[in-house]
Length: 405
Image (cartoon, rainbow, N blue to C red; front, side):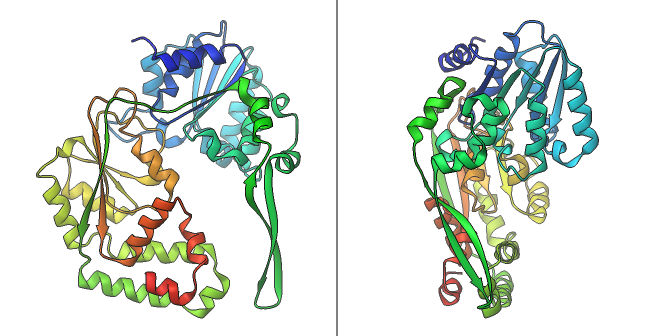
């Protein structure tokens, strides 16, 4: 199968350099282009492919990144597939990979989902930057548009080559980020300062530095994405539990600290209280009278939801958001059900592209299950406005938050 025109353009553009970045929207076939670029380099003796562990060890019946690479290429050298999380969590794995790259004569290093290279305080990021020093050929893959994560660019470009930006992180922030320093007071005694990014500047200059080394591409298919909402009623028992949790968490002491972990724990427990409501299950059973269960993905937040859906709908593919929303190629499916809501817009956007991707021949349909409860309304608002729900909660007064929930 020949390359699509945009894939050929990406290959031709990045073939000119020894390092490069594919900022191509999820579903555009970054893996295929990557294989072509690796194959274009003669006499490689090692390929190291870093990817999220969930894409290397994918669910049963779902193609892994190893399957995808083998589908498009047969590298004529030693090939390692390494979970990017392992580099931060396992000293043994990190040192083993680092030693193999050091000993290789001509290695090629690829980081899939390079959004994982961003936090400079993270051990994973520091170790990947150390590994990058010993490879001449490097490629990063990112399904998030360049404009959505400018602050994360420094570490990603530093991984490719310090010669691209030629500035440290502090200079990068001072050159391209507009930020303000906010002082907060706790209990009228303790103060702490926090920098908040308020915008970006000198973007044309930034693009002039990196444009040779990146290729950007949006996904355009001849099939449609069709979104639907199914309403259901939360049962009385679940609603009572939900309200009890709300009263426990929403008090003056909690509001004074406005701790992120408290808000997250509260929303998780409140959502868990009604995640398997009777009418919700009934609504889904009714939907499966009209759609093919075996062509359907069900995304869940909770283990209880996953176990329930696997038991009730055994032909469907039941997945968790954070383990499976990124990276997997699920083009054999065409229906996606969001059984539990998730407020993270990036996760939601990526989950859409498990089915809507190159090679899909059918329209992709999505269903949200929408309960008659305040928390679901807030989930919807945060997704619609692309807001961080925790930060939104922290901006509300105790009275307003209770009313909205």
